[in-house]
Image 1 (cartoon, rainbow, N blue to C red):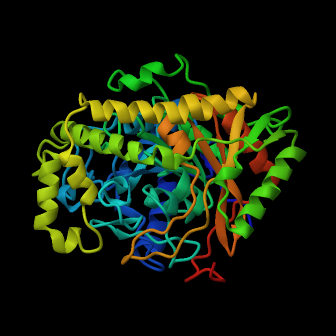
Image 2 (image 1 turned 135 degrees about the vertical axis):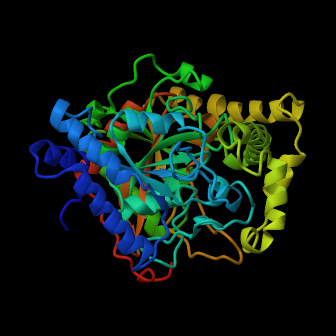
Length: 499
């Protein structure tokens, strides 16, 4: 199968004059019409930008007059619909309560994309409210967009909450997309859709203008077909923002992550294998064992086995933190970015969902919203204690301790298992996931394709300490280039065998 054209390929073609941004935008809009609106009806894209062609035309004119602004000049990018876009598109988080609400201005990450010359092609579907509404939700479903389908097996789940962003890139509806993660929402759908996903260190990329869950765990990040494309996108997204205090902890100079693309990056690296994160599925775990052997061939020393505190020991505390921060964050976001919306608080959203229950609550409830509304403020001891426990277990006694004690550069593990069968009655049955340690710590996590089981993609994870994205990108790139596991989907109705 021929390699999918990456961002650098598209940029080269535009520089040579054999392709224009307008042609590229029209090509992807055609794919959206063919596969998202018709054909398998993936439902990955909630809304296309009515000004995309106009923007591309202006960027083509600018290129001819002044040259390209950078590697994303004229490149279409899809954005998850929990990042505010101050244009003619809505910013809804998948909710009918915000279905026709225009954001007051761009999220900072979106503004950086526009400044880099990227064309914001549209907004992607997501697990509604980034999957914080119900404890029995079905990932990939929103009341506004319906259910996003997995392009490798249409009856299986795409995971979430960045479901539409991952499915769109996997299906060739855009070359790159922006997702967000609180715990697993970039790396899980990326892994399940055979993609590269980067969950950055919290504070590397501004969250200003992102519909919030947690100011201690939320972050936007890249989803792409290759490490190179993800690195190019991260180089644009990353940077300090006076509107997001967390970014002040980031390095003063953001690295050019494209320079981390080194085929020899694994030579001399010490990687700790977290066997406790294995899935228990023989075929998946055998695939990861094969990946470990490949890492050794590429020059890495594998420390086997590295243990991390069981995430179940702090899972309840994590949820408490998220619920406290959700209430506080959403009550700030709505008046700021959606001042004309009929909902201005979490309590308003809960009441709206009750009124619109036939459409909003048809498959699952809003029990997590109700629990969040019952929480007090961020000055409560219960919140502070839960946050302290999470940081101690995930950082001090978790990733930081493992890196120091074993003198390792990064942790490796399966990102998770294969896509599960979608079940709108019982909700998700996602199985094992390695997302929580890095998510709770606020540390970087990169997933890269490691192969297939029953025609379904499996990802390999690289996790490191704070702001070690450049190192992890190098490791992921070296592995990717030596294995080339990425394969485009075939839109099968179901997987060849039942797992």
